[in-house]
Image (cartoon, rainbow, N blue to C red; front, side, top):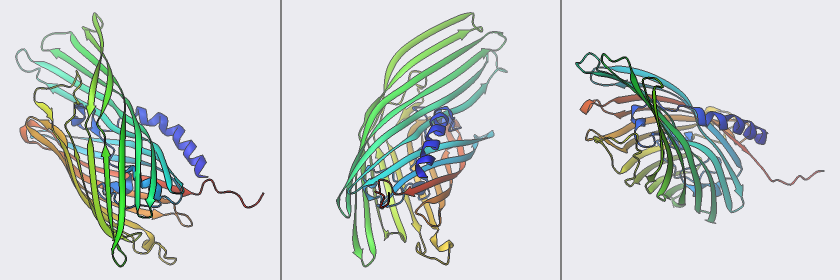
Length: 408
């Protein structure tokens, strides 16, 4: 059954993921867009904390996790998000429905493998700057769409019952298209500029996970993952139209974007399949995210940093009499410096999340629901503040593969 579900989902999402506009953030104008992927829903509901060697849920943040799976696990997730954008004088709102990930993990004895498709970042903004009332003024419109996706293949190995190591290879690809239209006051013609960048590149990630008992049933969980810096090749095309199609200029070139290295460290204490309290910190170096069409004098990039605390509580996963006791309850808090500085203001993303995992009776499969509320940016320095609420849903299907039949 799970194989049929995977095939149907792959055929559908392979088309949807590349066409969707996954953000409405004006900050997606910069770099490679608004970085969307924050882990699977189970981890996002704990603000990104993912330190336990889970046997039935996938953990994409650390490739060492796959060796702990006990069954083949397929998961797919999506989000409905609403955001309120405001400045000192204006407000606006936007909604988005997005596909978040499609993942498969396969246990193979002491080994584990995983692969999947993930939309990494999205560009999606519409900005209007109307100064046509001024003398020699102009009216400008800016629009962007597209983003970066990745497919990955991971392999992990269980060195000891409590110690895993792993690595993955990721192929990044995508397209970003921006359009700007400018018209001068009193002039009937306008100038339109269309920029298209096709992105592609490979990067690698390694990780390890270790756990040990520290008191009776209480265990210490640790996680360490490192992403190597890599390059994205950007094939760029620019078309400039003046007065409709009266004058058309076509240009093309190639540039290189640099994705910096990143280290993620996590630790927590708890009782497996009962409760967990953990924290995760992540740091990323400076990279080169500017492309020729989004370079600004008042914008530069800084080191990324994230601090999160979260956990879960599962009353009694073996209960036969109470379904509520078999629900996993999750929560978390996060603070992020997203690595972008505009008008000398460091853009931050602060939020909290809640979630619940509902088991499907008679199996290890489950349905997960999460809510995330947060604030990104500020109204200071003529910037925009985003207040957002995301409602996410994921399905995790578990089944045994490669089991030899006992009967003909």
